[in-house]
Image 1: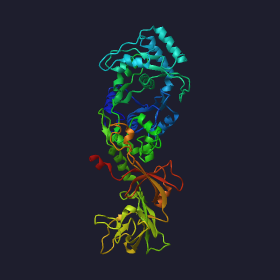
Image 2: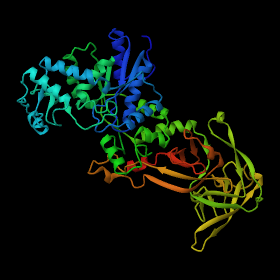
Image 3: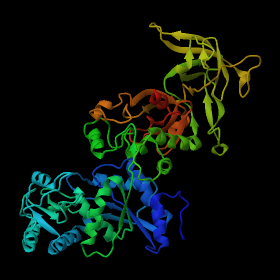
Image 4: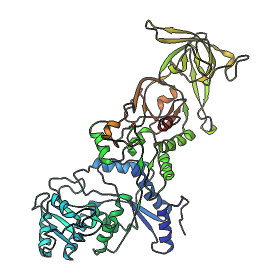
Length: 556
C-alpha cells in the first residue's frame, strides 16, 4: 500500500489500512475539532498527534475546525491560542474551518428534516424536557408538540431565526424514538434560541444555534472527512451521528470511531475545572507552568518532541485508564538528558573566598556542554577569588557518607581545582555567611597525590555570575485523583511553586533564549521564562527534576 506509515499500528490505523486496501477510500481525511472555550490541554495533544499524525503518515489531510456553536463561552483569544498550540506541536492544517462557516447549510438541513417529518418545534421547558426524557430503565414520553403540522413547525422555526421568541421558549428537536434504550436518541434538541450573544465569527447575525451532536456530523460530511475520531464519551452519540447523516441529502457519510481519552494523575483534565483554577486565581493563568495545558507545558519548558513521545508511549486504545504523571515527566527528562547543555547555577548561594587565589585574577577554564555528546562542544567558565556554592553543599561536621564540603575537608570545584575549607565565618546570630578556603594549584584536571577528595560541587563566580530568579515547579495537586473525596481545590499542593529570588547562574546563561533548555548540574532541567524575564533579570523555570522524587511518595 502506498504511503504506509512506520508508526506502530493502533486499531484506528488498522481500520484505515483495511479501508484503503478495500478501495473504500483513496485519500484519508481527518480533522481536529476543538471548542474555543479555553486553552488546549495534554489530552487534546493526544488527539492532535493522532489526527494530524495519520494525515502525515498516509496520503491524506487534516483540518483544524473550531466547534464554535456556543458563543456564550467562546472567545477569539482561545481561537488564536489553539492555532498556536497546533503549530508549536509541529503540525499545519490543510483547511482552517469553523462550524459557524456552515450555519446557513445547517439551517437548511434542519428545514429539510422538518419537511420530511423528522424534526419539530417543541415548546416544552428545559425542566419539562428532562421530565419527559425518562431514565435508563424507563422509556420517555413524547412531547405534546411532536405531531404538530409540518407547515407550523417550518413557520415557527423561521420565526425562531428571525428572533421573535425568547430564550428557552422553543427548541427544534429531532423526531426519533422516545423509547430508545439510548437516551441520546430520545428526540434530542438540535437547535436552541440564544439572544444577546456576539459570536466571534458571525457577530449578532444569528440568535439560534445548532447543538454539537447535530453540527458535528454535518461539518464532517461537508469537509469530506473519512474517519471522524472522537473520545469514548461520544460512543453513545454515534447512533445520532449516523441518524443525522442518514436523514439529510448530503452525499458524504463519514464514519465515527472512538478511542479512550487521556486521564493523567495529579492534575485535572476537565476544562470546567481548569477554567475555575484560572478564574479563581489559583494559578497565574492558562499558561501557568503547573497547568496541564499545552501553553503551560510549553512555558514550563516541555518540548514538542517530548509531548509527541508521551502520546506515542500511552498509545491509542479503547481501554479507559489513568496514566501516571511520571510517564509524562520521564518523556521530557529523557529528551533533555540527551540534548540539554549543562550549566552551573547556585540556587541558595553561600559565598566562598579562596584566600590564596589572587584577588585580581580571572582564570578561564573549559567545561563540557554535555558529558555524553562531544558534538555539543565546550564553553569557557571564569574562576575568580570569590565564588558561590550552594548552602546545602557545606556542613561543619558530617559523616563519611557526606560527599561534599566540610570544615577541614576537601572537595573539587566542578571543572576547576581542589579546595579545602579552613574557616566558616558566622554573623552575630550564628549563621554561616562566608567560607574561607584554600586551593591546590596542582589539581587542575588531576587528583591530588596522597589524599582522597570527598566529591565534586558546582559553583559560580561571585563577581561575574548573573543574578537570577528561579522557580521550582512541582505537581499542582497532592493526590493522584484531585477532588475524589470532595472539593478539588482542597487537594491543591501548597508547595507546587517555590520562588528563589537570589540565585546566581553562570554568565553563559545571561544570553539564554526562550526556546533553550539546560540542565543545571545537580539541580534539574530549566528554561528561561519568556513572559516574566527582563533584560538583566532572567527568570528560570524548573521543567523537571533530575529524578522522579514522587516515586517513593507514591509507594508509601
